[in-house]
Image 1 (cartoon, rainbow, N blue to C red):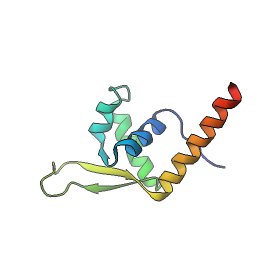
Image 2 (tube, one colour):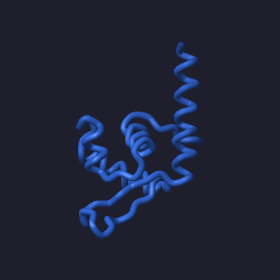
Image 3 (cartoon, helix red, strand yellow):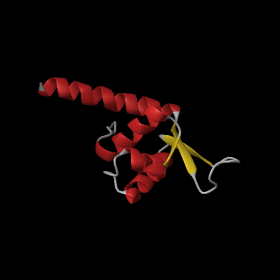
Length: 94
């Protein structure tokens, strides 16, 4: 069964796709603070465990406490599949 992203997980993935590599607080702020901060971090961790995101620690000159997340190739395919299904569903609903 193919898992289709909806809601907060989809919003986080779309933000990372649009803005590129991002850290949790950026995602929280870009959401207009509509996604609870804790939900952002838990979701990022789960998406990384699933291989949809990968992360790296801060580099020299960056805040040392940050982790930066980006989509993996698998994550891009997963997101595109979710968006295709969402579009087909929206067309079906009219």
